[in-house]
Length: 362
Image 1 (tube, rainbow, N blue to C red):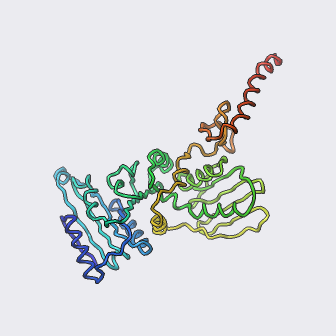
Image 2 (cartoon, rainbow, N blue to C red):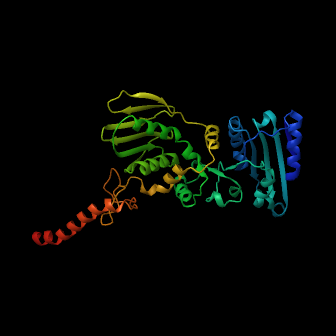
Image 3 (cartoon, rainbow, N blue to C red):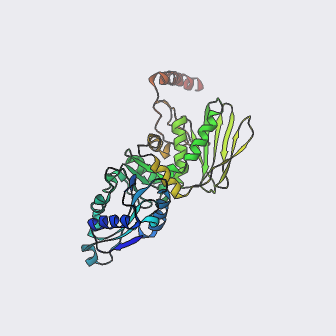
């Protein structure tokens, strides 16, 4: 059931929702959260379709906020709110309201959305495109417990990761991080099968793919080893290769659906590792609304530190890129003072012997 409201108010929209539920014979509200989608007209259809599919697992009230561009000065000074209310089969298993904002009201979208939120229910805000640099400080983001962005849709995805790290607030998350959940699970399971120490890692994937960078940062952060980032034609992530004390471990996915897991001393096996659609990604994010500390730690590791030797003393160069001899500036990993002491003593002895070696050479 669909109802179109022109030049309306939040009160009229709430009345239309009640009337729609009564008309289809379901007056009770059985939804578990409010999902606010902030998008443009071009991407609204795809985002709403993904949200409706995800609502089969998470019944929700979906509010789609579309900010329309005013073409004339007169339109910019006037305000208008149009709404499309959907209930029943047209809204998945919940309710959907498409809000189109015109004029000055575009800058006050939070005032429109606030009266439409489900009482005593969590709020999730999702930006499929054009996410703010600091989602938590956005007026709509401030209403939510969970803020979902997608750096893959950004013009400069890798640079966007640095901006996300600088502005991170508990509750922020990224669909580029959600895309690598099966990879992280598979790699963790592979390491559980052998007793070894990881020495180096290589992550292979498309250029300018933030999921590849996030996976590399997660491995570098958790394993405390240099991680090399190499390029391929894709699609997406194509391989992760780990050099360990018990032999190489590789997870290779060349076709985007079926991967091969190879562990030294074991037969290679095929594992399902397909590329998931947006509906599956959103459904996964809605399963947990608490802060993702693992994502925060990986994000703050920093793209610029990939490929560097993590443990370096203050007297030694900052680090060298894995697979090359070029020095790269990288902040040393925090280590205990007890672990630093031997390196400092060795560096001091080397410094004392240097003048004598020069004199001998002369």
